[in-house]
Image (cartoon, rainbow, N blue to C red):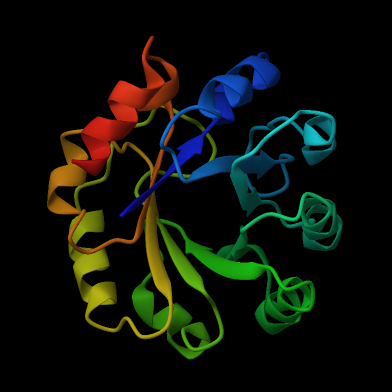
Length: 205
């Protein structure tokens, strides 16, 4: 299982936090991008990251309906993954193809209330399914327990795509998930601490 560290709550100290993550065992830095078109909140912009040194791969999670702009901005960072929401557009195939055309892995995210059958026809086209275990928009929320059942069901359908979970992930909530997921996204549990590596290690053990 890999760890992707969300820096959603750290928009006022991006450089400091990204620099602190360089010497940890985290696998990715998770960028939650919001522009108030899909959620009520906004985040830092992808442009702000252009001049920040980083040796970790980015894992970009776009929470926006303005996908043409946001995906093209994300492509400039050459990330490992670009994930967008099923609920944000009717042109799913268009954006899958756009991301893949740049040799970047593509993920499809689903909100807590979205049923798995809605993504069934895309499972053979994407590299990752991101299951939200909180309502998108704010960091530091509590994990929604029904996510466990959803992920177990998705695991039974897994073939060629990775499973990621995002929201309320800490050393307690990870216990029932780790055998079913490939990537755990964790934010405040790690970045609110004084020892990032200790928290990352606690998720991996």
